[in-house]
Image (cartoon, rainbow, N blue to C red; front, side, top):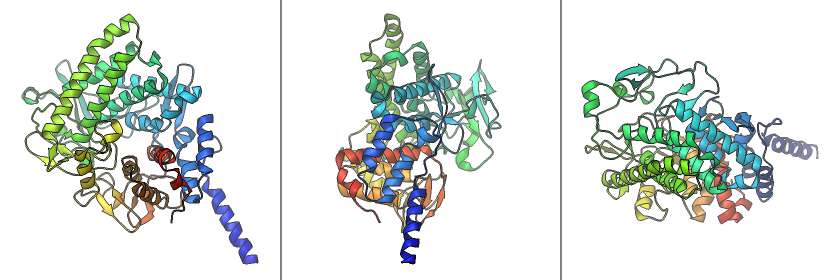
Length: 474
């Protein structure tokens, strides 16, 4: 009897410890709390239940470090790094997008993040991460330049945490604004500052689409980057290998913050094409003042033209053997792989670039989730996509979530959910990555983007196959 009591107490204590939410939360939303209760009450598996309870609200609980509801203005950190990434902050808040019309406080938070992002783009469209206040970051010594009055000048400033140019950082800003508008029909975010930021984004994209011939003659480039570190953290010669103009946009870094092999990254370009089109649609249908409409019109036309040009180039240069490739140089060189971070080849339908049931996407998906992808790892704990950011044999939960978000197959969804809830290392959160044979060996215990993505997957399953939430997962 004493043994049974001790075991019961241990189990009770373990379950009590499984709720890892902080007592003092950074931001609270009534609709999110109601959703947590409604969905978690269905769950019989405690691993699933507590991973959802902890992960889904993690961005609101822990990363809204500075919020002024009156402006509004919101600074959202990534988790264990106290800087705001454009890409991460959009994805972190996207988790709650379907709820913003049901909670005015939550709506104002997202609006505040849009305000902050627009200001950040206007500070420097080539930066990927920003400080809340001016300060030296650990990357202040990076050798990164911009062209000013025909001269390359040092561009790292105290506003910036990091200055890696990634197409998806700028596209993420447009995506958050578009998603917010579609849910709320609130046109107040579309002001002259927003249009100025959009103009800056379009100009940056055109600069990174240009023929490099003249730039090489003068060595005057709109952006260069070098870092004294590992090869995936720097760019050869500061500018990368020569490219042929194709209509695609150059990106020096991927969504993982790793440098590209060939700078025409297909997932980054696909996301840009899709979101530029959506941005144009938003501006076209929004009820704007006469002066805003007049200022928006040429930007609408430019976004539509650029979106179409990128899409055409992807289908011309970005396909081989019946599947999309990952990166190309426009001169015949290609690489097939996929990375865990979004945008990825696996994630293309999420942004509206292609339908899930399109044969081209299905062929690409099948290849990405196989040994044809050098970063697809199979272990005793799970199987899934990793990437060069951490290295061999480390699977990213984010990639397993993306796999779940891009399938309608019930069995595949069940398997994705099982792998996710059995590989937290008994921490009840998503991590950046874990070793394929031992989930207790993981990186980043506090990674809000991955936590939010897990919440998105659970929301999808709750709508499509709610019975999966009532199963046990061993």
